[in-house]
Image (tube, rainbow, N blue to C red; front, side):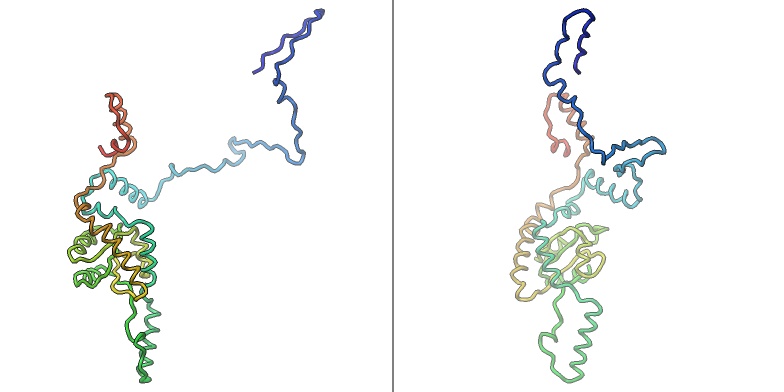
Length: 275
């Protein structure tokens, strides 16, 4: 604030001291455009509509949303046994993209496509024409269904097994990694049973199996199999000993850090979360 200047008294010939340089700089009035009138809003009761605010924290969410969020937090806080914790180690994004590109090439035919194929085959047989070898063979598709996939793994007919990480109840697939390792079948764990379901025209799918592929896709399958062995089969013993969960919340972490600071110790956030 600029100090008030002393007023000149009548009769004295002294002039008041000039204002400091730059004090009257902003005093010049800016010309307002008459086309745009200032209309200040009044947010009193019954006046202008309040601006939209983010009320996410105050929303009473449906029970199923609250339950699934609580489940995620509990799985972080509680100690999770290795058999279940291994499903948190999923395939990386780039390899998963390559895998789903391959899976989408071998999507099972729909009921209409199967009906059309069988009708064409029956028509060719009725006309006593020899169908081409390509048409007479059953097309190559991704196999799905838990019992079907387990049978293929036990018979060692599966080239690659794809397991979803969020199957509920987890007991349905918890034995599959051990079974695949015992039978020498490569397996991967990927994010999203719903994503697997889209491949086979279903809402969700717990497990998919690639049995055979065409000759042009052999190289791509071999790359995925080598990635599966490096990330899952070879690390099976490591994952078998690794417990999951046991991560503290932010409030608990801060409390431990304050205690450590009071005791003259230094404690990082990462170490405080795991205590």
